[in-house]
Image (tube, rainbow, N blue to C red; front, side):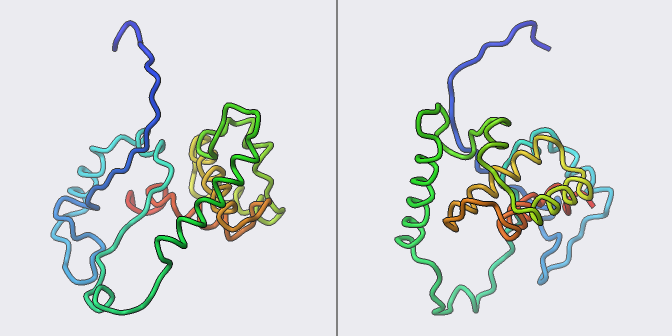
Length: 179
């Protein structure tokens, strides 16, 4: 290990992707995975648990069937999504006025307690998730930050069960890829 450290100011958003196994087909409904459980375990073991714990949103992106790609179904437009995000950012700006913090992702532990009120059922849900999933303190805080953002997108001052459930579901690697 290094005998000293140097700290540089930096703020960035990491977006990463990796296959669920060496062949890339684990969980694919159309192709059979050729990997043995020990191969998958070895492959996943190459990824640092502490690094994964620092990733706020972890999710699986399945292959999209052709019928969905070629369909005419309308989803949320980019303009609509931009408006949702703008409104959520405005809520955050109002929340953090006079503070160094500007966005939910940068809230301190103290700010989490102040700015992330949970409805009582959501508090119980979080407690159960931490216990059953074995979430670290870091993962607990990330779930709160993400659920606060989801609540902001929903224009809600309080974090409700659906907000928290969605945030917990974004902790995919705490749940499934390791089993």
